Image 1 (cartoon, rainbow, N blue to C red):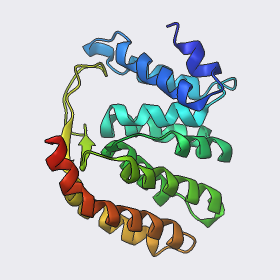
Image 2: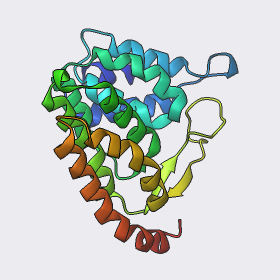
Image 3: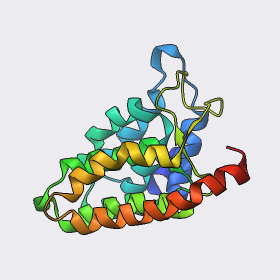
Image 4: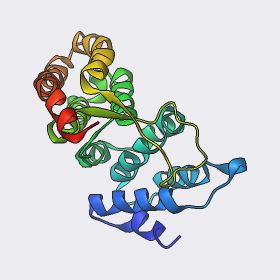
Length: 207
């Protein structure tokens, strides 16, 4: 519980994000209320005093795949443009399927009236995952069954190339929409480049 003040009041977005991660890992839960910690973090997002709402949401997403994404979608409306930019700037050194899918789903909801800045920021949240990835694989927790979000959670991995192929239809759809073309083309360019390196990284890391 001593981490919550850092989640709410910490001005440095990476420290606030790390406080969210540690809180969710070690927050006690049971089968009857396994997402208690998630609901508490959503409550933090609704708190007017929370300094780094974008960072808080960004660090929540990778933890539980589609189950948490479904809860977190409602919290997106609580973010202002500056919060969306902070969300995009909390970077991971791996590619997490839950984060990619959350961002793509968010982009599908947007239109030009939402602002070009939001479109660009969300696309910039996806690009660096491939830039920083050194596994050549995508972390996937969507099919795991576990109670809570602690360190016993087991990750599954998909080859980057196959995951890229899975996301290609939605990237194609987004690139056909007015105002999205350049942002999505930048994602595709970076991901195509990484596709060439992914096999080497997997062989080197033994994934």
